[in-house]
Image (cartoon, rainbow, N blue to C red; front, top):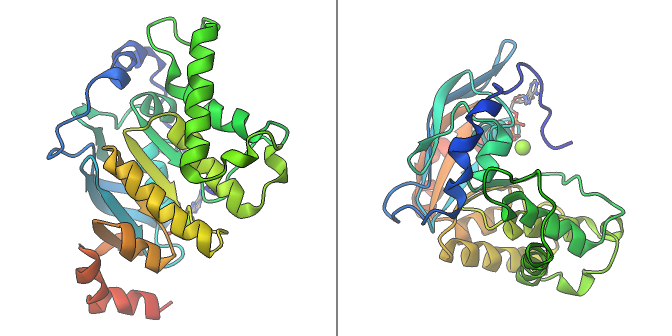
Length: 281
Ligand code: ADP
Ligand code: MG
């Protein structure tokens, strides 16, 4: 399990449902306005402050890297953004919508998708079926979504989205294999494909390069840039520094839950405090 979720459950706001239904099909926000903006996000676990006043803003088409030593709070940050973990303080907005009090599934319907550090894929489904599941997340619209069985046309559209996503990440040739037979790297790519099949507006990727071989990492870099070029705002948590330096427009460095530096890849590479945070671990 990538992210242990404990403590208070996210605030349940099922009643707020209708407000979010229509938004996924709305036009993308203007490119110069953040698609995702978090301000002063904080979360503690008992006495430990895992995330401490973090600000992150990502415009459409941009990739923001979130880096830092193990235990810095990166995965917790993603959980706070995705809504799978409730923040103790701070706000999260998707475009103009304040989603701070919305649970993860409502945020997902607004176009924010997260991939996990250790994907939990249904092993007995085929690769295509798993990818297609990602399309179901956003494939329906209207107030009765979820109550109605998808029409044949809707199902075909979702399967096409699943297939396109597999193609994009480079594992279309494995479409009919059971997901459980994939290598770790292939599972990570499938996890990404599943997220992309839902046509997210914001992609939160937790160490997508973990377990990938050199060719797969190179492919991942190309895929992430292509996804961003399509207008998606990407938050990339990643240890693989060459990839981070290559694909990110901006990098935010966390240490012990706090932002200790941010800027272009070149800025961050030259930042002594950042280097110390890494060398100190
Ligand atoms: P990173 O992803 O940067 O390695 P995490 O966000 O996973 O860091 O963890 C940040 C800190 O919060 C770590 O000290 C970790 O042990 C702690 N932590 C994370 N999740 C939980 C949890 N569910 N309960 C208690 N402590 C947690
Ligand atoms: Mg982590």
